[in-house]
Length: 129
Image 1 (tube, rainbow, N blue to C red):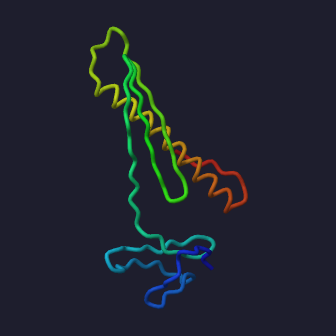
Image 2 (tube, rainbow, N blue to C red):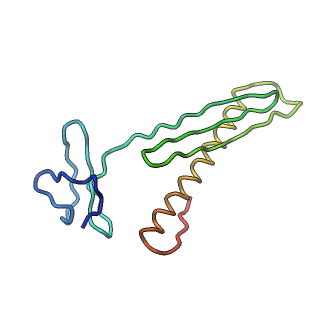
Image 3 (tube, one colour):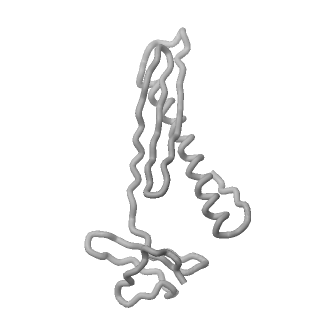
């Protein structure tokens, strides 16, 4: 049986433990039925927005990548340092710092996913990525 509190309305008489995966349109929202070991739940399509802000100090560029979800906030950090002999091209420092901030953010999301899996499965996991 599905344990999601937000999966209350089951269209077309579909019960959360039905064995067929369906996709249908409800208004303007497409909802998917996802099957897992506990049952099936509706998961609305989502768009996540990551905001990246930059700050510069002499030959260093810092990037902060922020992802705010309903229940969690993730903050990735990245930095780039220009070598004294390199030309000053700020966009290169931004590219490097943003890539490092997003990489940091990705690792935090992998850790959070592992924690959720561990809480469901009851044993340690190490997701690849």
